[in-house]
Structures are given as structure tokens and as C-alpha cells.
Image (cartoon, rainbow, N blue to C red):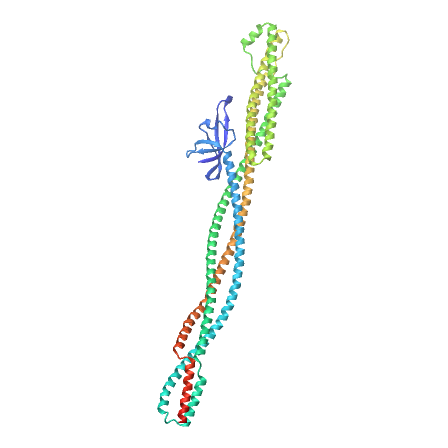
Length: 562
């Protein structure tokens, strides 16, 4: 499994070899998904050659096996850049989602306007349907009247046929009064008789009106089908938007869990940073005490005449110097003094170089604090390299200081022998007993200074990392809140869409309930009127019926005259 880790190197004595370990910071649980490790865990690097190309404190990607063994390590710079690029792409994705929501809003406004226009059309069609209802009542009255008249006509026809035979049989015995009475009946019959042709025209007019209304109803049905198609389309859009909204909610919830974990990790990191700062403060107090003790011891040594012997001459060496000619001894001392002066100059130059490195490290630190994330990675790497050079140079200078003190001790002892041989009295000094203590204090002071610098470097790295995490977390939290607001807006729009679809379905149901009874009436009246037209076609036309009545009156008149 991959881990984001910090490489830790420890230098062995005399610069030979060393041990390396990795401090695990986060675990890779998916593509561009890293889970912070709350409990600090440090794993040793078994193969030291894997870490030879990396620096102490460098961010790396470590492959760790199930048995917690470091299998391989690689630079984490590219991985961090890829994560930042993925984060940038997610921002572009959220921006496109907002644009899509805006397009949905415009589409819904257009659909709302279209629905308003259709509502006005429906109101107009409802008025036409009310007019059609009144025409339906007229047609029903006409049909009732037609059925009644047809029944009367059939009855009259039967009566006429029946009486015709009687008239023929009784014609000879017909009296004038009877003839007048028959004429009166025929006249009344002619007055009450309705012309079938006129009735046929009225029925045809009613059929045409029914057909016209059927065309209007057909248009209504077509519009209703259009509304149904639109409703199905809106339902599909609503279903799709619901799925997308649910997916956005699920993603938002995952982001919320990740932010909560990041907050907890950041809080734990701050606690560790606080603890490290407290430890560093205690180390500073101890270092100040060591420096104060070192200065007091140095002042005491200087008060007793300067540094004495850290290297005690052997009896053989002291005997050799005692037997050496004074001129040769003076020449040896002058040569040692010249070498000592050269060493002092070299140490002074090295100390100047150390001061220059300190200024360079401070300058790089100020640049790190004001640079962007991409430049910060290179600057921190340069700073780590400079700190490593400072550490090595400081160790070298410390060794040369000790060598310088040893040479000065030998030089002082040889001068003391030369002075005694010349008869100059040399007093013993307590410096001899203070110098080992001073060396021990200085060694401990140097170790504490190194540890303090290392702690400062680590704390600064943790502080920078914590600050970066705080900035990233703040930005992610702000985007998370914006996503939440966008989801709430989308939910409100979704409710509006649901309401629009429900209103559309309600309008469809209302129109169908309104159109269905009228359509049933039209479907019922049309075949009845068409059957009535066929029945009138079978009957004699209006002119023949009138002629029959006229002929009947003429026959009766002729019978009366005869």
C-alpha cells in the first residue's frame, strides 16, 4: 500500500553510512484520496541504498507491505502536483454543474411560460365546449321533436290508407255534410302535416353541426395528446434530475465525512505541534543554561591565564624536549606557532562560511513563507540542502576547534619547558583541571544546539504543512458550503418541477374528464341522426304527400258534385 511519508535520516559517526526511516503521514485509499494517519508511525528502511538519493525531511511516497516493511520509496513532488491538478479539475466540474443548473432554470422558465399559454388556450376551449353543450341540448330537442313528428306521420299514413278504402266503398253514399266534414278533416290534416323535406334539411344541418363539433373535439384531443407527451417528457427530465440530485447529495455526504476526518487530523497535528514547541522551549532553556555554564567556565579559564593543557605530554616526549638544544626547541615552537596560526585563520574562514549559510537559510525561510505552493516545494528542498551543508560544516569546524585547542595545549607545554630551561619560573594553573570540564560542556552544548536546530526545522516544516492544510481545508469547507447551498437550491427547483408536472397532470385529467362526456354525446347522436336521414329517404318526399291530400280533396269534391 502507498503512504505519504517524511524521510528521516541519521548520520553515523565520521560521516560513514547512516540509518533511514520513514514517518507515515497519510494512506492512499483510492485515486487522489488520502486518509490521514492520526497515530504517528515510523518504519525503518531496511535497504539504505533506497534513500541515498533523498534528503532528510523530504516528502516521499513509500510502498509498505502488509508486514510493515518499506518495499520502495519515491519522490512525492509529482504525486502532490497531480493531487492539486485533480482538485483544480473538480473545481471546473463544480462550475460546469452550476452552469447546467442555470440552464435548467431557464428551461423551467420557458416551460412555465408555455404552460401559461396552454392554460389560456384551455380556457378558450372550455368556452367553446360550453357552447357545444348548448348546441347539444338543441340537437336533443330537435331529435325528440323529429321522433314525435315521424310517429305522427306514420300514424297519419296508416289512417289515410285505411280511410281511403272506406271512401272508395262509401263514395256513392257520401252526403254533402259528410263531404264537408271530410274536407274539414283533410284541411286540418294538411295544416298539421309537416313537410318531410324540411325535416330532412334540419336533420342534415344537425349532422353537419355534429361533424363540425367533432372536428373541434378532435383538435382538443390532439392538444391533450400533446400535453400527455409533454408530461411524459417532463417526468423523464424529473427522473433524471432526481438521480443527479441524489448523486450530488451522496458525493456531498462523502465530502462532509472527509472534511470531518481532515478537521480531526488537523486538530491532532496542532496538538503535536504545540507539544513539539513546548519541548523546543524546554530545550532552549537547557541550552541557555549550558551556554551560561560554558561562558562562566571560559571566563574562569581566561581569568587564570587562558587555556591550558588538554593533551598531556608523555614522559618520553617531555624527556626528549628537556634534552633537545634550546635553539632547536625554539625553532620547533616557532613552527608549531606558525601551524597554529594557519589553523586559526582557517577556522575563522570556516566560521565566516557558517555565518553565510545561516543567512542563506534565513533568506530561504522568508521566501518559503511568501511563495506559492509550487515554488515552495523547490525552496524547501534548497533550504534542506543548505541546512545539511551547515550541519556538516559545523561538525567539521567543531573538530578543528578541538584540534586547535589540542595544538595550543601542546604549544603551551613546550613553551613552559623552554621557559623552565631558560630559568623562567612557571606557576601551575588551575586551568589544567578546568579544560576537560570546558570540553565536556562544549560538546554537550553543541549536541543540544544541533538537536534544537533539528527540532526547529521539524517544527517549521510541521507548521508550514499545518498552515497549508488549514488553507486547503478552509477552501474545501467553503466549497462544501457552496455545494450545500447549490444542493438546497436544486432541491427547491426540483420541488418546483414536481409541482409543475403535478399541475400538468391535473390539467390533463380535468380536460379528459371534460371532453369524454361531450365526445360520448357526439358519438351517440351521430349514428342516430344518420339513421333518421335514412328513414326519411324511405318515406315519400314532401311533394307526393301534399299531392295525395290534394287529390283526396278533389275526389271528395267530385263525389259531392255527382
